[in-house]
Structures are given as structure tokens and as C-alpha cells.
Image (cartoon, rainbow, N blue to C red):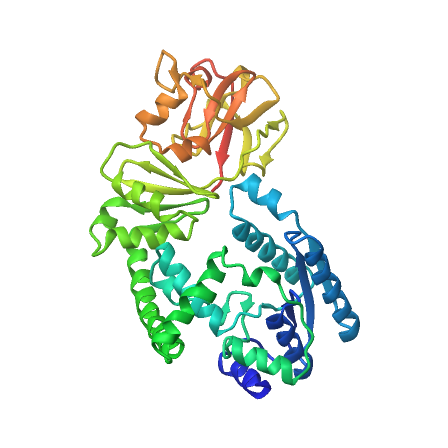
Length: 440
């Protein structure tokens, strides 16, 4: 088994000889075999263990056991306790999902802070088969049917060459100590029910069942590679990546061969589930303004486009321009200058504001849009709500939310990048011009 372990790492190019690996060690048989193989190999590694406090004294016993193994092996180790049930309740997760999120977030933190190259988990071939069936039962795409990958970004799975029976045999022959998780035999959990009830039934029907399923998964991996290449090319036709958001052209999307499938592949990368994606697809021919939310993103339909925007919280910052300032770098790059009105040529570009200096009250301030804001657009005698101005100018919702306003006291002087207020325009009475240019 040890030689096959080394061959698998080399064949799948999981990592290089000189790289540092962080081992996720629970204390169970799979992870303890993984630890034994790494110790025997001479690779540089550290250990990380999570106590999810789900099994009382048994969870603490696992932690103490791993700490004992650390003292034997003499390697760096990192331990963390989580209140998993509370985290699941507050976030509306299942216990399994909560533990997964907490675990991998902590693993990645330890990996990056301590300069490990990869995180190794002890998943094996039986886990691969179980994941295939679980994903199938929950409704999935072709990617979900390819199961667990040997290497996925910073996660590697060096035991995906072997199965549970071989691991148990190797542990016995090598006298490897491990902890038994009592919940492994409780069939109330989906994975355990599948493991103890469903899959053995298939194996009785066909002794080659596991072998055939693994071969099918390998075939699906080839199909998924072809599929991913096709989707990548189709995405390029319909989506444009901007600095702060992404735009999907609805007409282009609907003209592709499989628009709903393509939309699914685009939006799942932004944490949207299939139910919400179906709603978004059904809304493509409806009115603008509707919004759809995932945990970290939202989709805004605006005329012929879908805007994918991060849900990051926008703090209410206010920035000031003093009378002698000549440049501002935050939140925008603004170049500021005073000019004699007699020889000044007015610029009409939307990224330039030419303002009557004597009408201003310093310090000027820059802030975000607020509900109820109004101003007098250049060329108008009456007032207009800023929200109505944006609608009339066909400016998308997310751009309105991200817009900045130059103000003098309580008056809006310039919707930066769009329009100045008529009250601050240059007239025949203007003596000094304040020119402010937005640098992109």
C-alpha cells in the first residue's frame, strides 16, 4: 500500500517533494493511516484537528488522542474547538454543512498563515462512491456525479487510490492506533444509511458493483472535461467581468444552445441554488428591477442584462475636500484646480465638473446616495429626485447604489461622473471656476 501511495501522489501530481502538507486528522482509522503513510514517506507535514463538540466526552477523547499522537510524532499541530450546533442554528445550516464550513475555513486559515502548500484529507474510494450517490439523490449536474477530486485548489486527497477494506487491513498489519466514531454506525445519518443499507445491497446483487461504479465515475470525469470546455466557451459569449460586478447579456444568453444550463453553470459559481436559478431564468422576459439573492451575491435584472453583484456591506463613509486640496485619492481619484473664469473653457465631459467657486461652502463632502436625495440637474429649473434621474438616464440599480455625490453643505453639487447641479453652474457672473476631474 505504501508504494501505491507514493505512486498515486506522483501520478496525479498532488504535490512536490519539497512542499509542506497540512494533514486533517480526526483520529479515525482513515486519517490515522494517512498520518502513518506521511510519517513513513519523509514528507514535511503538520497536523490540524477540529473538535466540533457534537459527541460530548467522545469528541474530547478524539482531541486528546490526536494530541497524544502529536507528541509521539513531534510535528507542528493546530487544534480548534467549535460550537457547531450554535453556528448551524444561527446560519440556518444542517449540522453536517455547518461542520464542513467551519472545518474548511479553519484549515485554509492555518494553511495560509503557516505557509503550508496543501491540505490533505483522508477521503478514499468508498467516500467517492457514497458522494456520487448522495449527490445523485439531492439533484446535481454532471460535476456532482464525478464525485470527489484527487486535487481541488488547495485540497488534496492522497488516499483516493484505495478503499475502506484495504485501509482496515493495512491498519491491522501496521498496528496503527485509531479512535472509533460511534456515530459511524448510526443509520439515521444519510451517509451512514447509504453505507450500511443501500450500497451493500447493490454489492450483493453484483460483486463487481464498486468496480463498475468507479469505472463509470472515471468515464464521467472525461465527459465533464469536455462539457467544461464547452461551457467555458459559451460563458465568454454572454458574460462580461467588470471590476465590481459581472454582466450577463440576456439576449446573447437566450441565443445559446442551452440557455438554462448555461445560466445554471454561471450562477452556481456565485452560490445560487437551482431553485433560485430557475426563478431567475423564468424572469428573463419580465420587467426590470427584480433582485435575487444567494448568501454572498445578488442578481439584479435591469433591462437587457443581469448584473451579478457582491452583497458586501457598504459603510457610510464621508470624505472631505478642503479649500486648498488639489487631489483626492479615496474614495475616488479626483484632481482639483481653481481657474480664472475669464480665460476658462468649459468642459462638458461627464467625468469633469466645472463649478462656480463662490457658490461653494467648504469643506465640500463626498458621500453615497441616500433615499430621498434630490437636486436640480444642469439645464433644469425644477428639482428632481436622484432616483428618478437615474431611471430617466437608464442607469442600472447597482450603479446608483455605488454612485458618489459631491455636496456643499446639504446641497448636491455633482453626481460624480454624471451631472452637476444647475445651482452651481458657471454663469456670466462667475469669477473663479473650480474644476474637478474624475480620473478612471
